[in-house]
Image (cartoon, rainbow, N blue to C red):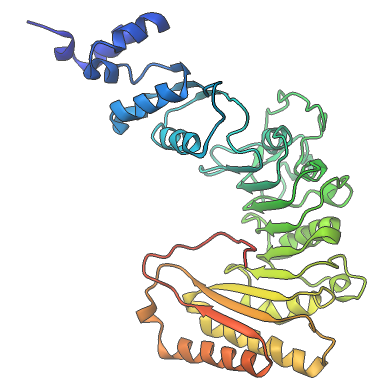
Length: 394
């Protein structure tokens, strides 16, 4: 005798697709197997408790069938960190999700926002207009992190068909005007968010000239800028120098992935008068360390953190020694505030493979720092370590 549980999956899905929401809820209460059979239906109006029950009862593998998701947080309680983890768990398990609606009781996190395009932007680009609109709509946004955001042809028509062919978004003119920014939803408009204190943008084209002219309503304390993989080094450098000049007066921490050469940063009237913490990422060209540090000599930098790949340890320590030698030659006014230099090794290589040459290089650097009365620490790789993000944390 044929029963519901003996029907082929395709027939079960066909039946489920014809149920309205009320009938589907009743049908789902029959037993756990039937509840699991509704996995491919859109989750509509699901509360926090509904989401918990769904994740507890439905095999994770079934979530790959979810195409539409409609979630509402419980109005009787504010959103908590566990809500975020449950949402992330569901999103990661739902690769076919094409329509998402969130009705939230306040923000999932009132101060932090991270938007990352996890797909190749040449295939599925994520528009700067959408990202800027979302960021400007978050109340009291203080920390914003963006990865692999694509420029819009509306704001970057000069890039259309131009070498080196930066991936662009077309057809995003239907994104509505923002109450604060209007139609100017380009990346430089992020500086108009008055509460913003920390900004990280990586793997994104930063060559918009409006970074130099956009109104700056925020007081950025930390800036983390990565290079655009589609642009040459000189273009990335000029773009980053432009942004640094725009937000420099309030900046205390900065993460650098490309070299600097602008002489204005080395002068006493530097655009970075409060910069005290500098982080150099592992993607930074090692042979540019001395020149870049010289270019930033006008800032009162107290702590320098350098992250490098294991293969670059010897060269990195040598570059830092060359910088310290230059500091000795220039006299007490050259980096007079510098008190600490730390080196960390990125990647998953085990510390046991940290050969004698690299060990000698780190010891020479630490001995040199000790002679100059500088605090220094070298963090060697541990098995299973992953490359951390370019952060200005000290």
